[in-house]
Amino acid sequence: MNLAPRWGAIQVPTEKKGDEMPIYVVLGNWTQKRMDTIKNLPESIKESGKVFESFGVKIKELVFTMGRYDVIGIFDAPNEEAISKALLSWGSRGLLRTETLTGFTPEKMVELVKAI
Image (tube, rainbow, N blue to C red; front, side, top):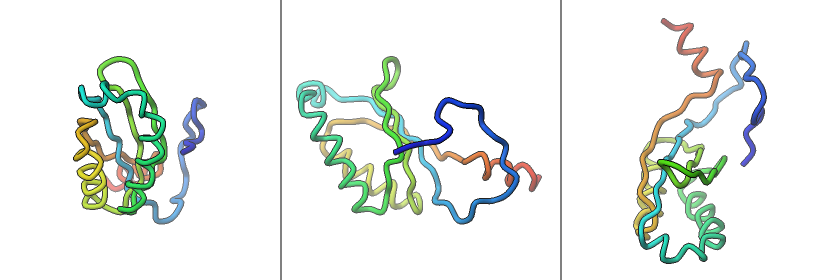
């Protein structure tokens, strides 16, 4: 789950890196059920990786935050169907409400901009 460069300047890419899976950014808020079971969070984090992997989804980064969202996740998934299945499966536990955004790498964004 390492995104490099993490805090450094973003370098503008000059060439495509090959076939990359789509990126999904998931904004999450804990439910009351999660707050009632917050001490189980370490085990839950480990289990989430296994659940997401079973749908072909890789957790690239999880960041726990203070403010509007409790957790932000960055995921690689082969398609919207895979990320949807993984999030529905995880969400069925009643511990998290999510909002999902499609993300683009700097390389992909440069490719999109060049095409207009």
